[in-house]
Image (cartoon, rainbow, N blue to C red; front, side, top):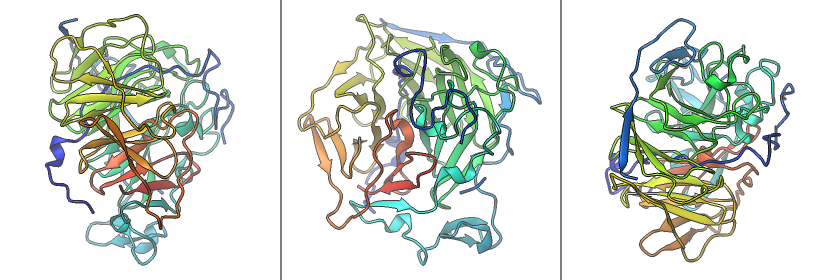
Length: 449
């Protein structure tokens, strides 16, 4: 494993930016693998302005309909969301064994190649790790369960529990709002609770009748916030089931309690987004689009928003972007559709994006919503848009740098799905490798740089 050579906490992904993305070309919405239009679809493996919303704690057994500061149960057990404790090897997936001291399933090197043993330049398909194994029964809620991933869905890396987390669906594709986590030690998926069963109610509220967020296209506006121990969704769009409503709700899923809580809403609601967290400032930021393009930041501790200017020019930036913070460069960088934009994160007032031109762009640079994340060891953003190579962004040389797969690596990762990869490609700092979730019926893939 590569030497880290710097404090991890300094350079963990930094600010959240939301950039809009349309749900298909028209009101028909998501049409892609697993999209079913609502039919029945096919559990462990200018100057800155600041606004603060007043909050009222509203907690009830059934949850609330979205009052700021309210909480709503996820529908599952209120634990950390990990796999249940094991008491023997029979409680663990086939490629793992039970650590009797910790009660956790861990990789068995006698049965499979464990993550710490993945060589540099190699991909590894983790056999027996399809999310499909932990999906709810087919007729639990309307829609296609494949759309949990395929309907413009994103995810986060839960650095405190070393897990990949995926949440998605929405529009007429899938009504379920349950969250999924892939444990990188147990090499197994867990469904963190069950979906809301009543999927009616007021779509414009952004919530189901039980008070939990409605299923939605999550695009790239999900961020893991360590202060909260939570995954936060920066607004919402493509909601079940019309998909024609955008909400400014900021909802966070607490992994320790299994509950959702509402926080101060975003300045505006928009379709799609790119999101990241800035450990240096304790803020989340976002850029709205495709019609809006200004930067806003969210102070987690103060529960308040700051807008950094306005749209500056007519039109938005499009809906093809995936964005991540480069912590040491103090930049938010968004890539997709043969474009690269950058925002200066240290400007307290108005800030406008810069269009960057880098030499030696990779094949597939024109893809929308690629995989992108910050590599702590390399101190660069790393891009994946298909194929076996990874590419890093050298902002000093203003060039792309290829990191090809090793000559003896025979594993070929799946091609990106048409609706984008978003946050389902993440750098797992605890393992010093990248993790890819491509479809519910496919295994998880990893790649060491």
